[in-house]
Length: 587
Image (tube, rainbow, N blue to C red; front, side, top):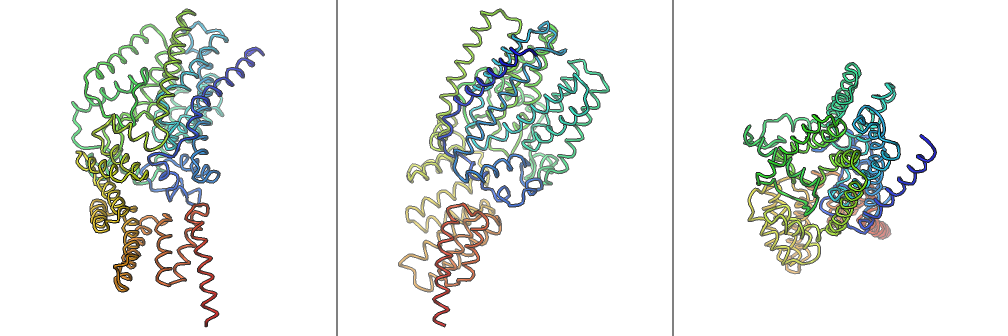
């Protein structure tokens, strides 16, 4: 590569970095939304033993995601700025990797044959355009603006590094390149399970590129071995979930799946995703599986297009289209899931959009200059505007859930979370209205009902209606006996009731004991959840049991020394030491 091309690469890479950062800089002022805080402060993920990430019992086995969150937490604690900054950086790196991959595919190798080995300058320009399309594509707003959406970006980062290493292996046959491919593939799997699609992408690439059979079999076998190691390391709950009979409580798949509705749902869901790749407008956090048969027709049209490109020997375009289909396939299985809150999600298109962005560049390889420039400008301007508008929705829980409720009025999750946002804003009447709407909707799980009753109980506590609150908390725990938050909240309710002027001394002691019982149950279910431990410290302090109170306050400080509760616990520990000293003097 000549010096001019190296300078051009540096210049274009700088532009990609600047454009990507400017596109998402507004997210640095965003709050945490939805389950961000739960992910960041999950007991396992805050464990002091880093190896615990690889041997946990979570439903989702994503140790690299948890490690990245723990690393951010060590720098930023619960300041959302730092977590959003990390997301932007990962998206910038992925945009640069798309640029590098595009340049590698467009300029040389068997894949670029239809372009008559495009000149370096043309390949460089079209790779740059593909990277810009990827950087500003509106479908990425969920993954970048939502801290919890990092899992798709992190998996894609290692997926792209693995594929770049495999391209080197395919062209140069170096064993070190294959070993690097396997390592990055493992990293991608440790970030999100949909990275299994890498095996299919590599196999199709090898076939289309005319890779020698032995070489292709060797590389595919190596990748399958990596996946088997990952599958063994994955927790038992995660493995059994996919093996359990559909419809059972522990199964991933829902019951009632027949051959007829399987393909119907598949074609409708795939059609929706294909539409959003090309026309990423009117986005929604919780879209429903469409019922319009036009989406099935769109899926069929997509497949017909692939066949037409294959017949025209557009090998690169065929491969990139296959990239979209293969990397989307794991997410299409979620259409039949009974354990996920969102059977369809924008974030599931983050990895497939790599193929789409590069496909735009590949299709422009043979177009004339005027058509290419006009097409590029229209796409980038339209996508940038849509991204800018969509990011406003992700500012905080209030903006996110008000938008989602408007677009998905039949969603229990949308109304529940909007109610929670209104509760946090102190709008108790509006919050209660949304939660009662959620209770009236169909297709509600026991866990969702428990969460709604728990929030209703919190509202009644805030309003001072303790009997109503107790009733709601009982319903929450009946619906889900493992609702840790409900146990903590009902314990707090009894603490509040114990301070009532109406409670005599005997009644007060009884209420404190009931509070302790519930706090202990919450702590038993989640040993590293610090809120109930802090509350237990308060309860025992009120009882005059200084030793036990001190023990619980110390556990709060040990588990999360930078938290607000830890700072308050330290103040109480100082008071306890003072009380102990005075008691010793009296003795």
